[in-house]
Amino acid sequence: MSQLDFSSDKYLNMDLLRFTTAGSVDDGKSTLIGRLLFDSKSIFEDQLEHVEEASKKMGGHQMNLALVTDGLKAEREQGITIDVAYRYFATPKRKFIIADTPGHIQYTRNMVTGASTANLAIVLVDARNGVVEQTCRHAFIASLLQIKHLVLCVNKMDLVDYDEETFNRIKNKFDDFSSKLDIQDIHYIPISALKGDNVVDQSANMAWYKGSTLLYTLESVHIASDHNFVDARFPVQRVIRPQSDKFHDFRGYAGRIEGGIFKPGDEVIALPSGFTSKVKTVETLEGKLEEAFPPMSVVMTLEDDIDISRGDMIAKPNNQPRIGQDIDIMVCWLNEKKLQLRGKYAIKHTTKSARCVVREVKYKVDINNLHKIEDDLVVGLNDIGRITIRTTEPLFHDAYKQNRSTGSMILVDEHTNETVGAGMII
Image (cartoon, rainbow, N blue to C red; front, side):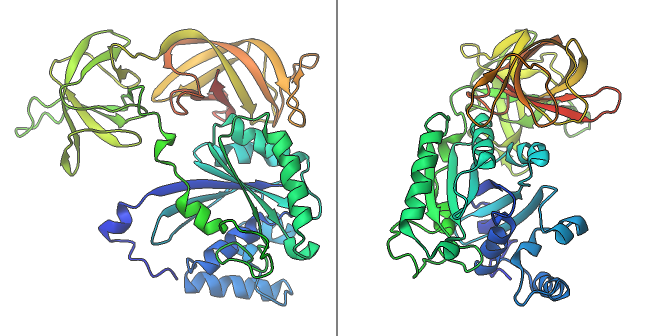
C-alpha cells in the first residue's frame, strides 16, 4: 500500500489532478490503471489479495491488473468496462482522481460523465490497430469538454516488438486529426500496460523514446492556470443565517468560486437584482481569508444587506456574465429516449434550477470527420448536436470555452427525473 500519510496536512494541501482514461474496447485502459496503481504502490494489501484470487478463478497464469478497476460482475465476466470506475491515489508530488470510462460506443455517455470534471484525458491506442473511430470520438469529446491536456498512450508496444516506426506512424496520424480540435497540450507516450514499460518506470525496451513516463507526466503537467482567474463568478448555493446569540446579525453566502478572485473590499454586483455592495469578509472553517479563488468553497459576507438567495450570482460590476433566456448549446444526449423538438425539460445550471423548451435542432456532429449533419436532426443516445433552448428564467452564463462551470448545464426529464443531456453553452 502507499507509504503516504493521508491524514497529514501535507497530503491534504497537495495539488489534485483529475484525469480520465478512454479508448476503444480492449485497448487496455483498466490494465493501465491497475499497473499505475500497482507500480506506484497505491493498492492496499487486501485489494491486491482480492485481485490475485479473482485472477486465479478466471484461469489466469498471472495477476490481472484490470480487475483493480473492473468492479461489476458483468465487467469481469466480459472483460470490459461498463460503468465509470473512480479510483484515488497519491504520490509524494500530487493527488489523483481517476475516472476509468468505457470504450464501447453505447457507453459514450459514461465517457462524458467521467470527463466532465477532468483536467487531463488519457486516450489509449492499440499499437496494432492505430487510430480508430473511437480514438477520434473520445478525443473530440475531450476537446468539446475543454480538457486542456491530453496524453495519447500507444499501448501494447510489446506486441509490435517495441517498433519506433509504428509509434511514429500513429503519432503523425493523430496529429493530423487533433489539428482540428481545441486541445492546447498533447503528449505522446509509447507504453505496455501489461509489462509496465513507460508507465511508472522508464522502459529499457524503447531506448529510442526520450520522453517522460506516464506517471511523471501526470505529476508534472501544469494545471494551475486551467481555471479562469479573470472573470469573477460566485453562484450562491446557500444563505447562512444562524440567528444565534453569538451570530445574531450574521448573513453569509455560501458557495464555490467558479471564476476570478474575490477579496475583502472588492465591489460586487448581485444578479439578478443588480444591487451593488462591497465584500466584507471571505471565510472558511479555518477562518477569514485575504483572497479566494477557484475552486475554493467559501462563505462571503457583504457590507450591505441585499436580498440574495440560492441560484443568484455574485460578480464584479465591470465584468458580468451574459444574462439571457435564448441559449445555444452543444448537447451530448445521454438517454435512450430521443430529444424532443419543442419538448420541455428541467435544467440545472450552477446552483440554479429552471425549465426550458427545445426551440431548434441546428445540426448533429459526425464524430469521425467533425462534419455537420444537417439532413438528420434526430438526436438520440450518444449523439452530439447543436440546439437552441429557451429557459423560463434568465441564466447568468458564460461560454463553456470561457468557463466550464458557468458554461455547462444538464437537462433532466421532468417525468422520470433522469439526466438526459449534458449541455455546453456556445
